[in-house]
Length: 314
Ligand code: CP
Ligand code: NVA
Image (tube, rainbow, N blue to C red):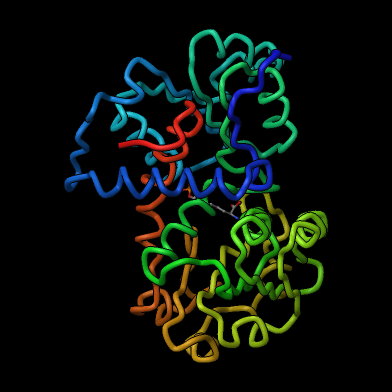
């Protein structure tokens, strides 16, 4: 492994609250500078001459396109890499791949079905590695979620967020963020699909206020935002059991009525409307899911700038 540690972004909990805030501030600044689809590259293209490697070992729409477009808007280049087409697919080690790619690239995004692969890549890479989703966590999603909540409702600190459904990768990153950003989190999950105990223990020991329950109504009561995700994540092979277990956890109009009168509905997408959320809620005024998707672009531009050592811009 290399001597000086690059600014990796593997998990929310690896950063400080101030670092997350710096990323979100830069994200808002670059978003405000954007004029429609055009992004003025001023004072100079901050990432000009830099190259991003986008390694997606699992399907992706938002992560892939937002990183590709965002890096180019900041003046950089992008190589889209499909791990199965690389020598990795024929057994070249992650350690060697990381050391080679570090000679060509300036930052690497990896989406993988094996969390350990991400950790191994980061261990050997001398350039920043960004977690593009693993079965364990999805930290970039939470940057966009916090940004979206705050655009609509102001500071998230002290507010109450309800997570209803699967205690999955996105939930883990949300749990970590609740400690660093100081929001109250209530998670309602069915038996067998609990959120990560390790994440909850870490978050609570860092000041988080987290309630876990089996009752979606208890979680939603008075909440400022209700968040859910697909019942069947990439790599899950127990879809039938999940459909049964999660049925009572669907986000319905009635459930949203239990939340605060101006509660937001959020979802990282892709959604399965009619499963985890009714069409009525998904299409309602409370639903900010497409703002949330757009903010993937802006928040990841903030993140890229942070990885390259910026703490503020413009
Ligand atoms: N929310 C999210 O990460 O979407 P993709 O799987 O399309 O990247
Ligand atoms: N929990 C989902 C998120 C997709 C963006 C999955 O891992 O498939």
